[in-house]
Image (cartoon, rainbow, N blue to C red; front, side):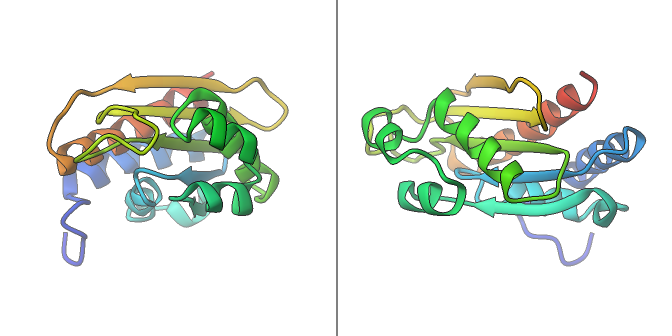
Amino acid sequence: MAGLSPCIDEALVARAAEVVAGLKRKQLTLVTAESCTAGLISAALSQAPGAGEVLHGSFVTYTKANKAMALGVDLFVLKSQGSVNAEVVRQLARGALARSPADLALAVSGVLGPEPDVDGNPVGLVYFCCCHRHEELRVLRADMGQLPHDTLRREAVLQGLAFIDTCIER
């Protein structure tokens, strides 16, 4: 496809189109809260036909300070536990839903390298959280190993898209 970012190829857009179709089928809308993927999940979704009907947007909160300020993640949790854990992605997802009209939120935070993060989390560790309004949150931990940065980033986007599918089929 012409005009795509080198990180978003046709196969990724095809997978995103499946997710968009699933959201449309279930009459659900989505917002993302992305850290390590830096908005690539929503960027992939935005390339799919019909995305404008289901995608409300994305919060890209790369730093701890922005996670706290933009989405209300507890600074004590960020300082004491770091930003790559189940509690932080839960708070990111809740914060995104609270600041959006979407029905569903996907949050992601992880370490895509090339080095471990400042809290000592290893390269390849990624947490995802998916939640519907007024429902229990689902969290997924992925240990993808020490792969090249672009490979990890692509895998994190694919796993995020797959996790959305899992959540909409609840």
